[in-house]
Amino acid sequence: MSLIAGNWKMYNGPVEAGELCRTLRKTDLPDGVEVIVCPPFVSLAESVQVLAGTEIGVFAQNCHWEAEGAFTGEVSAPMLKELGVYGTLVGHSERRQWFGETDDTVARRVYACLEAGLQVIACVGETEEQRDKGATHAVLRRQVAGFEADQNLVIAYEPVWAIGTGRTATPDMAQEAHETIKELLDVPMLYGGSVKPDNAAELLAQPAIDGALVGGASLEVDSFAAICRAAIR
Ligand code: 13P
Image (cartoon, rainbow, N blue to C red; front, top):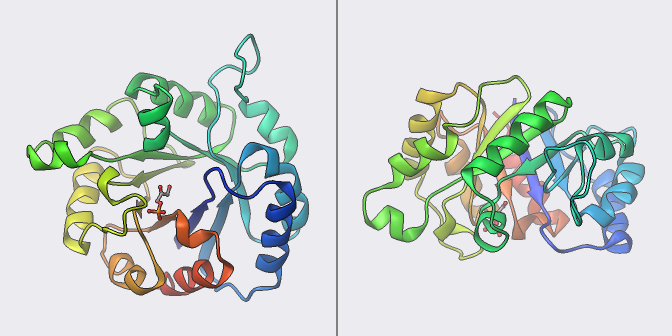
C-alpha cells in the first residue's frame, strides 16, 4: 500500500480547509493508496468533520510529548485524539529550522505520540551544506537514532534543499537515502521535497519509496489527486 500525505503547512484556515476537503470528498481518489491531509491546528476540526466517513485521514503537523501542562502554544496527543485526528507529522525541517526543534525533542514527540496511539510521520533530511560535505548518511543516521520501529511509525525523507525549491532529489538519490534509513529501521518511508504530478511516478517507482509527503502540490486538488494516482502500484 502506498501512502500520499499532503502537508498544508500554514495555509488554509477553517473556511478554505472545509472547501478543499469538500472538493477532495467528491474527487475520485485511487483505491490501494492511503491518502492523508495535514491541515494547520485551527482547521483540524473542520477537516475531520468534512472528511468523516471517507478513507482520507486527517493528521496534525506537530504534537507535544506531554498530555497536558504549562506549554503555551503546544497541543497534546490526547487533545488531537479527542478531535478525531489519526496522527501527526513530527520534526518537519521547518520546525527544526525556525522553532528550535532538535533530534532530542523530535524523538520525545515521536515516542509520546506513538504511546498515545497516534500514527506518526517523522521527518528527517539533510541540508544542502551537509550534502555538499558528504555528510548526508551520517546526518540521517543521527536523526533516526532516537526512533524505534513501530507499526504506527512512518519516516519521511525530505532533503531540506528540495523543499519548496522546485529542486527534487533524483530517484537514485532518494532511493539511496531511504536504503540508509531502512537499514536501521524497517518502517515505511515517504519522499518529500518538490513532489509534483510530473515527477511523482518516477520517484514512487523506486523500491524503497513507499509514498510521498507533498507540500505545495497538495494545496490544489487536481495536482494532489494526480500524485495519488501516480502512487498506484
Ligand atoms: P514542497 O512539496 O512544497 O517542496 O514541500 C515539501 C514538504 O515540506 C512537505 O512536508
